[in-house]
Length: 253
Image (cartoon, rainbow, N blue to C red):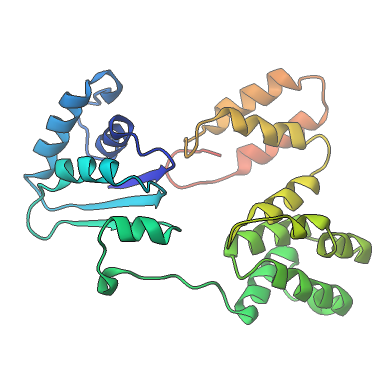
């Protein structure tokens, strides 16, 4: 079972997410269940089999919420495991994780960071044709702090762009100087957004209407964009791109 938690550690929502990740042959709609019903159903499900539950991207630092949740899931068969991913040391401490059971992911080395950045910023081997861009790229890489998502995002925004001024604009952008938390990727994401073509920005912004971690069917986005920007000749281009997008399982964006 794999559940994206993020900032939503409200008990009822968390129980629904977990139950939705379990085999559900009856296709029940757990949204109609009361909290007590959800607790009983999950307890009954977990206590008869060994399980692995992954709670991804946890941010809750309120002890009461964690203890309340733990009482419900602490019923599994011997050998059951719960794996938590978080960027907060406070969360790991809250869950009383033993140091031997914790694995601290390190940022990428400078060499690996450059390799990942180049992979997304240029075609294979093409970086050798533009050594001056590669030097600017090395400086951009340092600003990404070894964060894979930041490197991929900024690198993709520069893909096939060979104008030295554009690369220097990214490197020297004031957004890198904004106050941020440790390992924050917001500057990289903002830079990527700023580099979008004008007609793509409102389409990208339309995703803010969706809930975090929601699965979005390509067909739904196609209809939304087609209706909203039906007068734009670029809509056909976007829809064509969406139709070629492949993801695991159902087509989703």
